[in-house]
Amino acid sequence: MSEEDNKEISLECEIVPINSYPKYKNELQKKKLIIVEGKDDLYFLNYYLKHLDIMDIEVRPIGGKICSGNLEPFIKSHRNFNSLKAIGFIVDADDHNAAHEFKRLTVEIITVNNNSPIPGLELKCPDSIDEFSVNSPRIGIYVLPNNFDSGRLEDLFLNCVRGKPGMACVLPFSTCVSELDDPPRNLSKMKALAFIATQKELPRGVGGAAQHGIWDFGSSELDKLKTFILSL
Image (cartoon, rainbow, N blue to C red; front, side, top):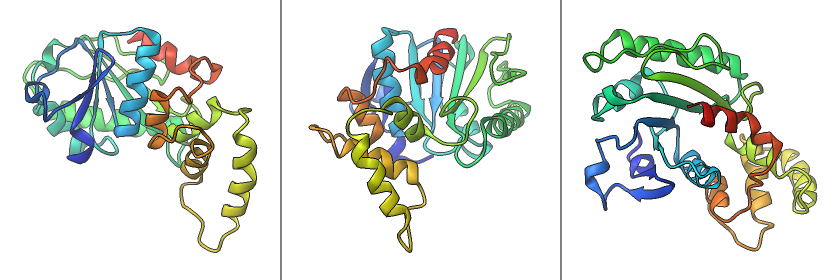
């Protein structure tokens, strides 16, 4: 786990710095937990949950791609896992489609479960990407940007701000950048940051953009994710 990505959590729609509240570092506070990959995911979900007025979900970043190398120690290092009613994993599809990432992550969860990280804890994966498991804790997996396509949080952000005035500036810029001899490897992140640069306030990353109201939380692009969160 990246220490930098694990210094903060979201609790009751507030970003809580662990250094200031060390009692939260290894002790889960809510009965519902969302595990995300990094800080942008954490910030985005914190402000989106606030928008939805949902206070009973705790969000914690694992500090990178979720895998058996970090998921097992994450579980072992947190008290109260046995008391959880539901766990949601929200991850990026990256260069694969959602079905590929869903299958990869279910294998990781099954592998960790077979190692019995906590006595009495049983992690059962859902049968499909649109379902939750029926055991306790219930488990669901949501793959960004939309539980179908390849991509990541930045692609979801771009889908939500499609048609906004600033995008008229981003499109020719991204075309120019993509024609460079050595263009950025992550073009969606480049486009997202370029759009943020057109705003009056310049937050840091798409997670910070959620705090500044730059995301369109009313966009239909968020409907699937909203349903997932409400089903947790």
